[in-house]
Each structure stands twice: as C-alpha cells, then as structure tokens.
Length: 183
Ligand code: ATP
Ligand code: MG
Image 1 (cartoon, rainbow, N blue to C red):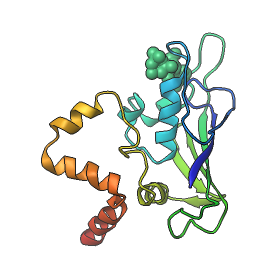
Image 2 (cartoon, rainbow, N blue to C red; image 1 turned 120 degrees about the vertical axis):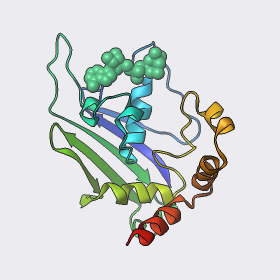
Image 3 (cartoon, rainbow, N blue to C red; image 1 turned 180 degrees about the vertical axis):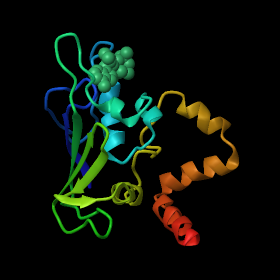
Image 4 (cartoon, rainbow, N blue to C red; image 1 turned 90 degrees about the vertical axis):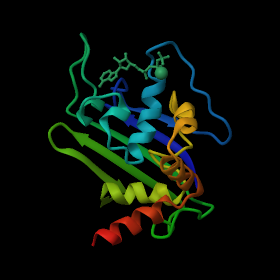
C-alpha cells in the first residue's frame, strides 16, 4: 500500500485545485519560504485524521480553509483527497477489497469535517484506524516534525513507549483495547 496521489482544494494556501502525483522512491518538496511546503505536509496529516488545530498551526480547524487574500475571497470549505495504491493488498482488513483506496476529508465552515472512503461516508475513527493499522497516520513517527527528535530523547518512558507502539503498528490495537475498557 502506498501513497499515490494527493489532491487539495481550498486547503490553506492551495486555493486552486492542486493534484500531486507521489512517485515511488524519495520525494523532495522545494520552493521559496512561504510557498506552501509545510502546508502540503499538513494536508497529509489532516487527511489521515489529525484533529488538533495546533498541529495545523491554527487556532480552530476552520483555519485550514483558504482565508482569502487582497485579491481573492475566502473559501467556505476545504477538501483533501488521498489516493492509496493497494494493488499489493496490504491495506488493513475491511479496506482491502480494492486496488485503489480514495480517502476524502472535507471541512465546511461551522459544519466541521466529513470523511469518505471509496465514496462511502465514514467516521474520523475509521480513517485513523486505517492508517494506524498500516503503521502510519497523523501521529505516526513516519512524519517527523521540527523539534520532534529532541522530544523523543527527552520523553517520559510512557510517552516513548507510545511512540514505539505506533512505529510497531500496534497502536490501533491499543486504541481498540482502550475503547473496549470504556464500554
Ligand atoms: P518555509 O520555507 O518558510 O518553511 P513553507 O513553504 O513551508 O515556508 P508554508 O508554511 O507551508 O510555507 O506556507 C505559509 C503560507 O501559507 C503563508 O503565506 C500563509 O499565509 C499561507 N496560509 C496558511 N494558512 C492559510 C489559509 N488558511 N488561507 C490562506 N493562506 C494560508
Ligand atoms: Mg515550512
């Protein structure tokens, strides 16, 4: 299972529809300061179910919607689509019937986020679980934020264990156990 394509529409500075093919191997994103490199990585986190506005450098989640400039008016919604290539059939059970998995997250001002997987309405949790079971996701150690290495070194043992569990791909199980204990 691999990331194949990322589409943005109205997300942060990407006001016009933007379609990025993610080729196999290493991808570098280069460009001048403020051109949107970090916004792109935030779009990846966001589509994987990130729900902390601070992780998107915002005060509220609506801050990911294009806020307008002197020449262009603000948008009422933002949408990100991530296409996964699942020809290797490595997607977790329940998502593993198709060659291609399309995940869409859309946020509308005052109405919050809605998610779809292959056209079907799903919950944020379903998207988070898909990625948690695939050993990636919004909180995955595969995405390394600035300052995160020193956080890992200085982390308390319990927090460090959580990071290792995510890396080992068992955080989905951990979350399900936690939910089962609450029931
Ligand atoms: P650097 O090289 O400095 O790290 P960068 O390429 O990572 O820059 P970003 O931080 O991704 O740049 O992009 C910042 C730009 O995105 C700023 O110009 C900011 O105004 C714009 N931006 C962020 N959120 C929004 C929004 N909701 N609406 C419109 N523009 C936005
Ligand atoms: Mg940046």
